Image 1 (spheres, rainbow, N blue to C red):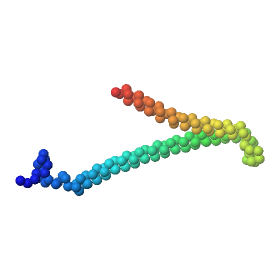
Image 2: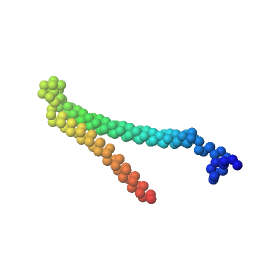
Image 3: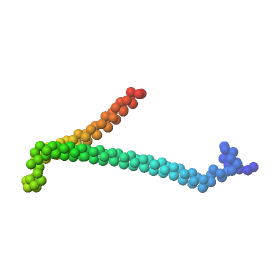
Image 4: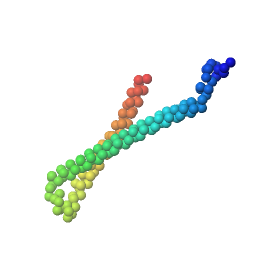
Length: 138
């Protein structure tokens, strides 16, 4: 009689499943599949981190622009009330008026801080409400 391969399978080609190159090919395909999944996951995480970082930079820039704009509006309102104090020659000789400048800087920093806090507090509330809503669905 001819060898039938595996006793339970009844395969007429005994070396078909046990050929070394077939095992290497399968191992290589499994490795490539795992490498592809790992690379895909790593690229997805890198993309997510890049998006989060860019959103953070945009929020900080927004806060800085809002703060500087508010400070300039306050300084401009002081300059409109008393333009003689803000004359360029006078500022070059004795410097800008200290009170209005410090108030403008303080308001600019306060505005930037309020916007920054609103960006930090709002996502925390969303996460809390989202987890609260999903717990009620159960």
